[in-house]
Length: 456
Image (cartoon, rainbow, N blue to C red; front, side, top):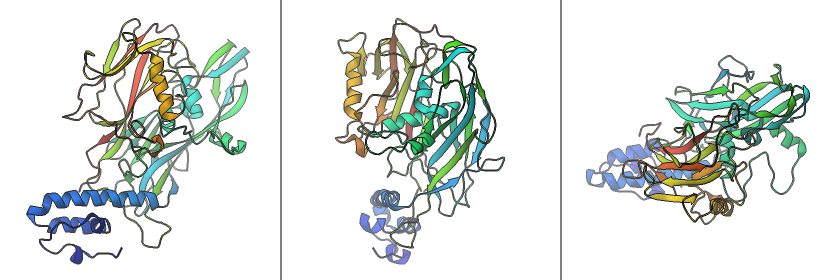
């Protein structure tokens, strides 16, 4: 399509142009066009421009080449030593036309597992999911405020929710699997002695859909760069399936010591595009003006979690939720969050008293909890990796004929005019009894925030 100059596209008091023509304009040309339409056509023109912008942005995200750049630590270098309980800060890189889509985080921890007297070790539920990445407590992405706050295991869980039978990058479900590559992406030996735990994972900022720009962060030299905050876990060994990576499974004298050196570090990289594409030398342009953003949010925790009766917790974040995932920790074992046999009932309610429900399984109904797990297996072709994970909302996959295309529409709308009082509820047979593991329910949401990072 020929490039349309502002003079051609936006004569004074023009009418509404077709979406194809508008999509071929640059962002500045579309703004000039909106400034020149007649008042009677303003509303229709704005709608046409929004549709054209979405079309052009999707084309950009399908065609633009990805580049990887280091997020430099504030202390210099390309990585920082992992230190339990410490906070590590990394600056987002800047590049002309740069748009950051994802973060690629690498964790390497050289540890010594004490031999003790017959000491043995096993992965906690979180450690089984995220491996060495479980050594990170939380990740925060700041850009004019916190845009994302999540635990690494959530990034791993979202990989299982990407489509039917999909696997995360460190697992090959079928086909060729090179052991060397696999070990570099995730490795965690639990045999007594000295070893290096490795994990590499992605935090997808535009988590709603690969061709949707919501969540992408502009990172040009003309803008104030954002930063990433990595909060290291307080301890690698312990009984909490979320806070700890491994637990003592037998023997005495169990201990995990972190050995500082070149094998112990956390590295953060940005996967970004700058409009470069294989189709020609003229760069593509991504228009974020007026576009909503995507945020990762840790919602309110249900704590303390008691046994024998139903307990409810409101989803406090009032946005449009594309993912809402609860982790039920019963505090009875470290290797799973909560066993299927112990979590005897759960529900998603439209109100605080559970009078009206979206769904209910188990206790108080004649619907088995296994009906819920069958639904997950039917949608994704596999179970969640550890018991105790309940994905209430996975809009990109739920309701889609083909879960792989991530075009599902079952978004939980908690904005005004939607469902503003949604509660999730649980009933467990028993809780507690395991030292260092507090019974609770943690809920994470990935949401669409209508407030744009870049003003129109």
